[in-house]
Image 1 (tube, rainbow, N blue to C red):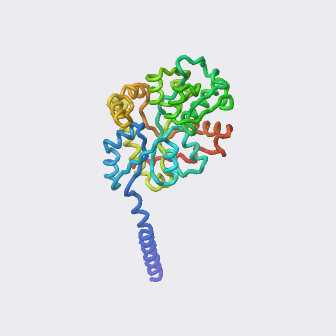
Image 2 (cartoon, helix red, strand yellow; image 1 turned 120 degrees about the horizontal axis):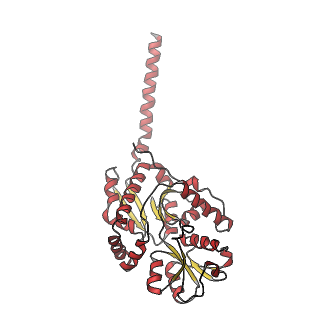
Length: 324
């Protein structure tokens, strides 16, 4: 009888422990699905402009219990990553270089997915005496500090046996670099599409090198807040999946995407057609090649004194949960 009584006491205690665990974790369970998901976007990010218009993310997330999606506009990548690190947004897309600076600065974020980068080029005026990358030595070369163009510039210089110490770097936004390029105040300009296409079509710029050379190519990334990714992996997976499907479909309808991008940015549709004609459209999980590429970039930036400390890119790579 004593053993039966003991078993009953153990069973009763176990039930109480389970009930208590459920009770005390109820708030955490209730938070498994956020009320709102906040996505950072830029007018030049045509896929996110399309997603915002078609509301495919909203539709997918409503089925999971998410009440709303908030789209937060940014002018360029670094401020978006600042907002991500501060928890002001949950997801955004940027080129390869901003995440390196963000991680070096201790930002609380993760790589969520990868996509091919927009085409970049090293541009010079049509009548410039610069014919090769080696001719950039001692010249004023403009690019956005902390942007993907900075990475392309460093890689391009390395192909000619040069470093940033061999040029006069001029840190300019695309808008300011456009004026400097047309005014003859810089010798070369490293920039991405659609500014690459604009410079070609409107200003008769000539490319000394571009990222069709795979030695210069890289990727862009969807970056998520680390806390958001950890707390809501199913929701984040659903957002990435919808953006992947949207991206692949957009790649099959590039003229329509060019028209939408033109409407969003005010940049002529023909320029967007040129940019999209040489673009690749896909979204994939972060793989070993992406990590190696980003690590090489981080190590190069540290060696050049561009970032203050060594970082391990693999430490902030998020893995989607296995489908059930």
